[in-house]
Image: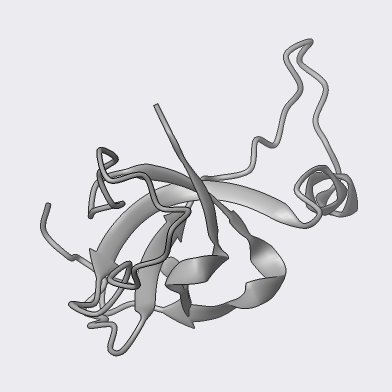
Length: 107
């Protein structure tokens, strides 16, 4: 996967493109902005765009030996309040965060 953001993470950081928040409910009602924010309070999901070479390299007993570490292109769930919003070279919004802010990879 190419990195359209132009952001190169260092140390244990990763770059995530957050999933767009729906402006409409499944029933067709439009949601005001404050409602959209409440729906995504605390947890978000997005695409992992770039991973620094040191990210996810820590080794501890809880990491299953057979599992793959997250990589660019994976759909991930993360904590919004552990990330910094940053504008990429392409003008899009990205989140820069520590690798440990990634709560999981979605299948």
